[in-house]
Structures are given as structure tokens and as C-alpha cells.
Image (cartoon, rainbow, N blue to C red; front, side, top):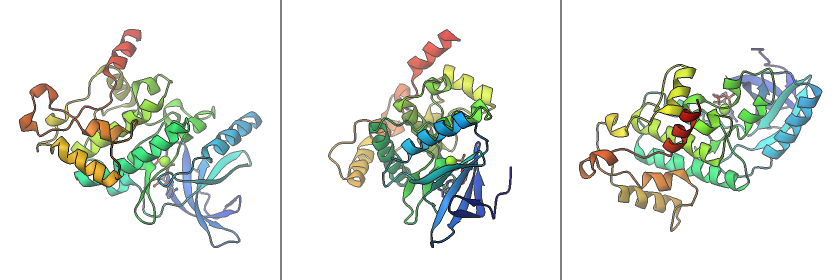
Length: 296
Ligand SMILES: Nc1ncnc2c1ncn2[C@@H]1O[C@H](COP(=O)(O)OP(=O)(O)O)[C@@H](O)[C@H]1O
Ligand SMILES: [Mg+2]
């Protein structure tokens, strides 16, 4: 990884490294003339001329997304073959940092975060965008602690560069829906990933862990371990959850495509459920996995 602190990208000087992921480094940038800060995402790649054009088209499309719960793309360019994006700076870290791996997140916090992410996804899906990399690392926190979904479509954008490994480029396996693993992401793939995030927050672990190959095979072939095997305490009543959801969302019925409203409705106290229904049913496409398995 190149340390680019001090370099200038577009109108921004890179002040400090905020972090790095599979396909990019993210820096805090200071505008060279104005008193403005932004996050500068510098991709780990050099683009050919043809790839530059593709990158610019994709970045321009992604920059059209405007929603209070989506990190805005303010600018983009390619400098000496290195593509970069200028984004809103989210000063309070990510939900991964707030809820570290292995911890259980209290239900009110889960509902609040999921509602914001689901609203952002609903909006983007209506604009025919698929995020492809929904995970707590991409849920950032703004100045008022509001949740901001970042990296819309960037997994696919990075994937267009041949120098990146497939696994890094197309998403993050433990959250990836089977059809996305197969290279056919759709709107429901984002809802699947959000379902995995909720599962993780409820019980402290994701449905499938292990090496990349192990996770991939499990995603394609196995149902998720039921939550009641992992969560010792009974889950609250679905009615309470529904009421809570509607109060917070201030809407008569949950939005049609949003993951949490339709799925959290199935949560019941363990004592009042039959053994078969003692789990939070996530949109894990069991029938689709069977289909994939038959094709393996
Ligand atoms: N817009 C942003 N504002 C502030 N920090 C950011 C922003 N985008 C990304 N980061 C930070 O940079 C780090 C690397 O981001 P990224 O390259 O997207 O990888 P990943 O999403 O896999 O963590 C993340 O840990 C995140 O906290
Ligand atoms: Mg990210």
C-alpha cells in the first residue's frame, strides 16, 4: 500500500489515512482553497484508457444517488491512472467500529440502524441500483450520529479493473447472497446482506464463518443455524417490534421492499413458538441454494 499522505488528488490534499479495505485506501482530504474536508477514496489499481472511460461512466451514475442516508459522491477523477472518488466525510466511524465483531447489539439500536439502511436501499433500488456490499463497515456515522450507507456500487466498479482479485472486488463473502456469489446480484441480494447483518447483531456471529471457500460452500448449500440456538434469551414479541418500527418510521405500513419490517414481524418469544418456528427467518433463499447445489 502506498502512503499517499501529503499528495494532492483533484482539489484535495490528503491529510491522514482513515482506513483501507479490499480495493481502496480512504484518506481525510482538505480542499486546497476552501475550508472543506472530504473523504478521498483512492483505488488500489491503475486503469487502462478503456477502463478510465468505464470508471468515469460508473462513477457519474453512482454520483446521482441523493439520499439522507447515503454517502454522497462529490467528485471523481483518474490521476496518473489511479482512480479516486471524493465523498462526504463521515466523522464518527462505522457501525463496525461502534459494534465490534462478536458483540450483541441491543434491539432498539438494531431497529434504528436497520430502518435507516433499509430506507437508503429502498431509494437506491427504486433507482435501479444494487449496492452489492452491504455490511457494517459500509454503514458510516455522520455528524449527528445518523447512519450513512457508503460504497454504493463500488464493489462492481472496482471489479471492472482486471488487476483486482475477484473475491475482493465483488463483495464480502459472509454477507453475500448465493446469486451474487454466482455473479448475478439483484435487489434481493442487498436485502440478504442486511439480513446477515441483523443476524450478526442479534447473536454476535454471522450465519457462516470460516475460509472463503468454506463460507461460499455454506452460503450455497446450507440453511443458516437457527437464531434460537445462538441467542440464550427469548426474543421480544413481534407486535412490540412492529409497533416500535411503525412509530419510528412514522408510517402506517412498512415499505414494501424493505427487509426489516417484513422479516422482524416473524420474531416471537421462544416460549410461544413451535420448535420449527423458533428462528428469525431471514431472506436466505433456501430454494435458490438448492438450485445452485444441483448445478454444482
Ligand atoms: N466517507 C468516509 N468518511 C470517513 N471514513 C470513511 C469513509 N469511507 C470509508 N471510511 C473509512 O475508511 C475505511 C476503509 O474503507 P473501505 O476502503 O471502504 O473499506 P471497508 O468498507 O471494507 O472497511 C473504513 O474503515 C471506514 O471507516
Ligand atoms: Mg467501505
